Amino acid sequence: MKIFAQSTDALKHKFYRLDEIIAQRLSNDPYTSLEAFLNNLQEECPDDLVQFDYNGDFSEFTIIYAPFAAKELVHSIDNHLHVDSTHSLIKGKIQLFAVTMKTSQNTIFPFCYFLVNPQTSEKIQECLVKFCEFAHLDPQHWSADCALNIARAIEDGFPLAQLSWCAVHVLRACAKVGSYFDNPQNFENFYLAMDFLTLRADATNAEKLAEESDETYEFLTTMLEEEEPRALKYFDKQWRRTKEHWMMLYRGEGDLSHTEMAHQKGDIFGANNLIFLILSI
Image 1 (cartoon, helix red, strand yellow):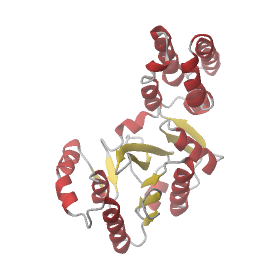
Image 2: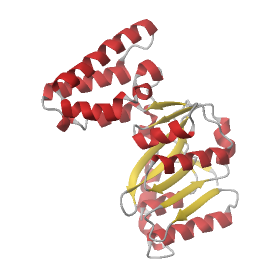
Image 3: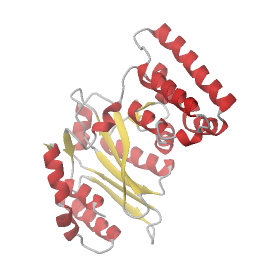
Image 4: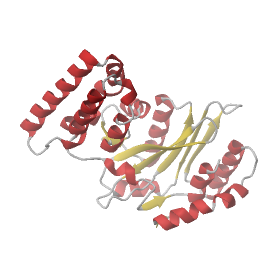
């Protein structure tokens, strides 16, 4: 296993190879083929973390892959781990999760991939804990997209760790909820307030940051409580309990928008044929 640079052209070339990858399937059934592929990886690289547990009809399964070399590399980079979920895959729109890390050069290293079904916080937690045990890690800080199941997995599995949500994912989610609002102007004000609280607040002055954040948050919640009952229900579920993860007041100045670059630039770590086999299922 090795790390190697992936340019945009190189990634496009690999997607052109999907037909070739599909032709290498060991079975017409995607799960059987993936299991056989993982078993081959385990035989070739017995020190890698490979797990494929499932029930008879694949309504429940846990699939984990992490190369042995990740154990050394993950300790050589002084930064927090990031959990991201990407393309919906296989039957039933199963998501591919990746554990990555950002360097000062904005390089993304996928250290571990996993798929679970059902995609509960308990199953995600199981995979994150297993990878950290494999890599001998005790993370003190995680970042992630704003999925509640990932947040609960980190909160329960690593109760002493800090979790920060990626500002880009937060705002992208907020931009999609206009249907919850009866008044379009309230939706615009909601988005502007979330944008300020997440990304635009001045973090160079702690007193000013706290004052402006409190004022904006109070304006936002008052508007929802008085005028937008459906949007309030959504806000309470997604954002009120989790404000320590997304408000700049709590998570600090960092944008944490590096998830936008995952799998698009930098270096990709691990068995690429595994990734493209999964993508082709």
